[in-house]
Image (cartoon, rainbow, N blue to C red; front, side):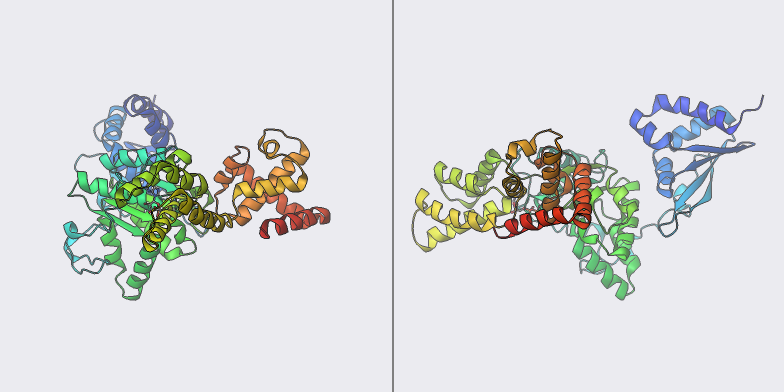
Length: 476
Ligand code: ADP
Ligand code: MG
């Protein structure tokens, strides 16, 4: 009896399953749909052009072997690619023919990006006609791993970063997406990875670029008609670090270009490191396809450092500045400046400046005077803790109750209100808010936010509660 496409593909999968790792199998083979079998040509449908290129890159040998086993030496494979066009919801399938022969150069298929030509590429970092090896990575040597203090607040991001620096483009952390609030070390950590790669692999081209600079370069390239040079320049980077990708919001053309660069680098085994002030799911103003790319690797967050980590950071800064501070002074700073690392550094600098200026030693007394002033200013930034306190005061309940698992109506509502204000009045991400208000996830916070918004619109009494609380929060 003649086999049909389903059966042939099923047999192929049975072989492939034993050869490739389970996660790869799930990611790259289960989504494939066998379409038809005509003589020796099997057509399979894949979800995207990228998917097709990745299969070609990584699994072509396996595909060829298994297919030949099933269909004989002249087996052919044809892809049907579902093209996702952002402007229309309709998928347009189109096909790429692939004779299952060893020496076919598949990189020249229509879906690939243009090949790189080193000599003609203009470097948007000013130096024209530059050769690949001379690209300045734009890294600040101060931002090394050595100077980056490890703590619970950054362990995952730090160790993933360190691991990939040993093996850029070869780990599952591609892209590595580092997110967290301002001053928590995103720039430092992402640069540390670049520095480490350069130390281990001097021949690799590393480039650090803030998203706003990328956007600016892209716009300039558009004006000067040098977009291709721009694209080519970025396509020859081995390790590309883009800082603050949330700044791509609303910049559709730049996003588009970045999307192509991302795909090209990813599919050629290059490493991407991205930072953002919030996790991929919460990025607004970015295209869906770009956000979905961001989720391919590992997303790891940086949180506010705890007391012990704050002490360790202070000690490290003091040490590298060559000054001496007593332990009680260090502890006083760490106990009173608890927002973010940049603030901690600021306090230290002010303290040093004051002591030099007044020719005084930094005693605990002097430290107290200065730090209390700084702490008062920083507390003006409304925090999630503070919001919880105000909301609880208003409803005359204990913060512990708000934080507990209880589902009592009044408490759920107070919790939702605290979440609502945290989203409105702080820069924290939904997941940070959730984790600080009763250990909830970002979806719960989003739901709370919508619920409160609805009630504000529809319920007069509720609206007046919210107004009262808002006044209290702002008069602080
Ligand atoms: P972000 O990019 O998240 O706003 P930065 O990377 O600019 O934050 O960090 C702010 C400052 O805090 C920098 O001077 C950085 O060196 C310092 N810093 C942040 N995290 C750490 C850490 N874990 N150890 C030492 N210094 C840190
Ligand atoms: Mg930064």
